[in-house]
Image (cartoon, rainbow, N blue to C red):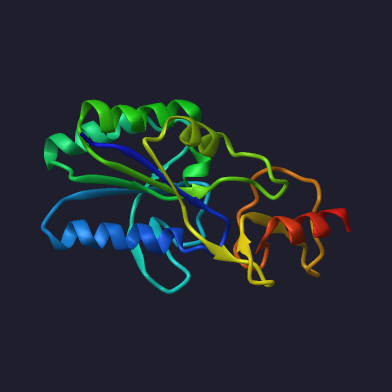
Length: 192
């Protein structure tokens, strides 16, 4: 039976790297995969999933109105898929997470989702909350805080490196805008 997986972590834990390795493993065995990433995140280029260590692959883009069930089902008819891999899963809607569950349950295709659990204020993203609620398998990937503890939080910083305490939930950025911290150091930074 196919499953819906959620691999979650803070920034800089290697989520995209892990996704690209899983994709490579399927393709190396001659199996077809379908890659997705959020349209809102254009850091990797026009249609790429890109890791910080330089790996990249072309991917389909999803936005809040993308019908993932219909898109995957149509692709599966053309070429049978062995796996669907989705990066930036925190940007999924709740309905889209249920569509991914349907892909696993009804189409029998494993779905591997990778994304952040929480935003820069420690709040769950909609997609992450839905995945935490219904995924068959939850896997926490580890990042490291500057103190050596496990980093579980994402601190947003401004141009001078100071903590940002308010603002919109989604602001795309990499190491220049976010720092992965343990809860202790995140809390200290947020208190100022």
